[in-house]
Image (cartoon, each protein chain N blue to C red):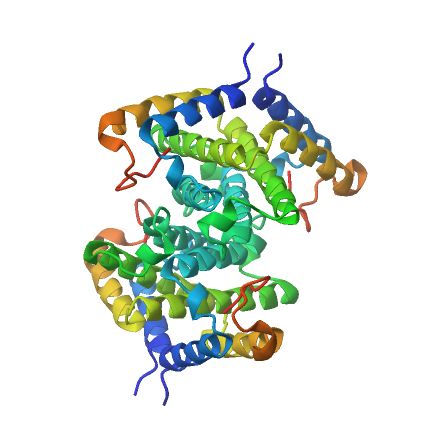
Amino acid sequence: MSDPLRDLRVALLAFAAERDWDQFHSPRNLATALAVEAAELLEPFQWLTEEQSRALPAETRAAVEEELADVLLYLIRLADKLDVDLAAAARAKILKNAEKYPVDKSRGSSRKYDAL
Amino acid sequence: MSDPLRDLRVALLAFAAERDWDQFHSPRNLATALAVEAAELLEPFQWLTEEQSRALPAETRAAVEEELADVLLYLIRLADKLDVDLAAAARAKILKNAEKYPVDKSRGSSRKYDAL
Amino acid sequence: MSDPLRDLRVALLAFAAERDWDQFHSPRNLATALAVEAAELLEPFQWLTEEQSRALPAETRAAVEEELADVLLYLIRLADKLDVDLAAAARAKILKNAEKYPVDKSRGSSRKYDAL
Amino acid sequence: MSDPLRDLRVALLAFAAERDWDQFHSPRNLATALAVEAAELLEPFQWLTEEQSRALPAETRAAVEEELADVLLYLIRLADKLDVDLAAAARAKILKNAEKYPVDKSRGSSRKYDAL
């Protein structure tokens, strides 16, 4: 079985190299593009209730799917440029969050919680 | 070899279930949290030149690594809630971008390009 | 009576000049800082229901007030750097929106509406 | 002389009332729309150097002007819904920043500075 994060990283590396786009892919530029894409992902939700957001029309869902992909691609590219192992960083963050939000003190409360 | 996107998705599912946080994880809320994290990731870059962003101080780099993790975790959680296969969506987007930006017409130019 | 947008613009001009910060205030940097502040303004709302957002605790409201100020200050500074008359641009946009969303066709519907 | 922030606030109030859009204008929704607009304002800058951002092509500048207006309109509307005096909050923030960044210690340095 293959690791999609690694495969996508390699594919993006080749994509940029073929187009000589590496020059534009400074971490700052990539972080900016990522924030712009994250806002495009948020855009279709801005006037929806939470309930409506759980049952998106097919057309909206397709657009959202593409924005999710854009965010992931910039994220992988930025992590690659910064030499960050994205999967390892995410695993470490889950452990940190587990300590920060112990099950017995966090159950059912969103107060002051700012993480998954 | 394991698939980190799948493993992280399962870990986040358990994390939310144990804390009864599923009620807060509407797609709208998760898309909002993702955009907030993407801006936190952008924050340390806002006054840096592109050149400076390529050589971050160790402390900044550690903070950025954690923000990268936050973005990935919300992204995986949101995709899960919307039943989107993140890796497949990303692969499809790379193919689409390859058609949109043919190598011979895109070489070395960032004009009107808005993708990887 | 004085015009607060003009007064604030002049105050920010002096503030930057005294600190020799003009060199950092490229439109790109200011647009980035503005987006970061807008996300900080969104942050306290991310887990609130719409109803809860209408009745913020005093502490949250004070924090939000300061973020509102930050966004306005960067907005004024960016408009100044780009030589844009912010009040005139806003008036023009309201007229444009009034044409785009005629009263009789827009009443009570948020469908496809993306403006005030 | 008139106060544009007050005039725009009143105009937006009438605009929403005529269309019965007040129901959609919860602080949370408005803060979300504001963040989305701020990212749209950032979008044209994402691949530009700072130098290029100081000399925008006419077409880009016109688009940026409209995005500046969008941000201001949502900002005014959100402040109105929260009963915040935007100009007073901005003046207070400038005073706070002046204390935080004394002229003699801040001259020419962007280190750790996160404000105007």
